[in-house]
Image (cartoon, rainbow, N blue to C red; front, side, top):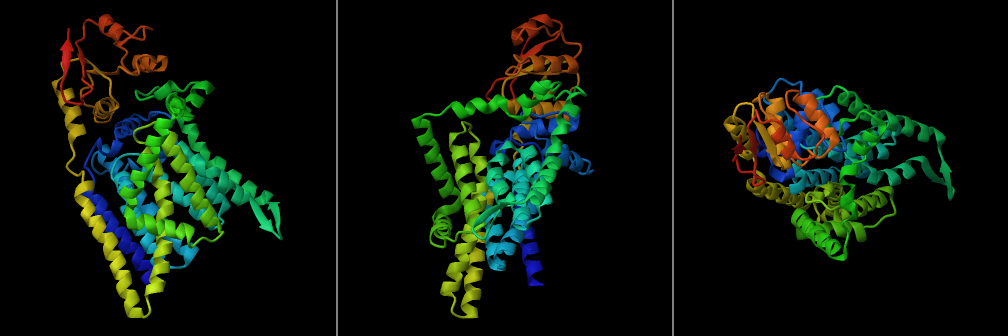
Length: 471
């Protein structure tokens, strides 16, 4: 009975924390500008920015049918529920591996209250679902559910390309086994895993199907194989991996170190490293968790992006499991009687819960309305049939959401200055705004000159709700 009540109590507590700190609509907090793009793609049955995120589109599209609140609110709730499911499966995973309720409770409760994990649970982004799928991949791997593990891996890669970092070690551990000091290959397991994998990866078929309907949010306008590969491979962002220099790598390592201290604290870092080093055992869990920590750390350091720290959620997952293991070790060492053990358990739980409650003011974005106020003020003040030209992701995606999803000001045209040089984007504009004259020129000034009958308005990159219009 207790084993059933404890995970429910954890989910209830974490759910309350998340719900109290979650915004009621669109937000820019925690680098969530892309949320407006995802919401607009869902509303228009379109395709968001590379890599298209078909797994997220598929599941959120289903969830968006829930008749409750705005689409932006549903996006936040979807992330909240996905992260709660991730925490639940993490609890079950640790319990399965250790048969220890205490370790499972510490690991899942701690992981849920890491600031980075918390932040992604209350905004419209792909990372809460990514966390759920990541843990599901591990859960099915250790349960030896090969078909289900293959499906989860395919869906993981369809949600975010960084899922590929865990594929090599899990794939090898799945299809290869050691018997009598010999490495053997199981074709049956390989077939089950591969079939499941391709079923999961089939979500990518959604992209060309959606693109051919010519929606207003239609990145790359996928109409052939080359366009499809350019989108799903994230070619648009691959140059960020080439910005590597000694000074940059040093800065990346410093940021990585600061991140660990800020998320784990000195005590958490010590407990994690203690389990990693002192409690070493040559198990699959040990080698897989080390692989996860190393690969995602290296990727986060070398990937030239201001939000690359978000890719360290798998690292926090490893540390949560390690901390749960070391906590169990120290509990057994200091607990000579059941009474002392009970006091120690309560003290540890109170420490984690107290830390989470103290973090609430810092994590609370429930009153953050800046993104919505910005877009609504711009659209309200824009002249009739204006051409609104914007050059920031935050501004563009917020305006897209209210323009396409909330159907606000259908008379205006929203133009991205940064994307206007792309042939596919100008084609999408022709589909979306057939009344506009759009030539093959890659300069947005040409658009303004070719449409003198409409007032053109330029928005500053400062994200202040100011509008500068010219006849």
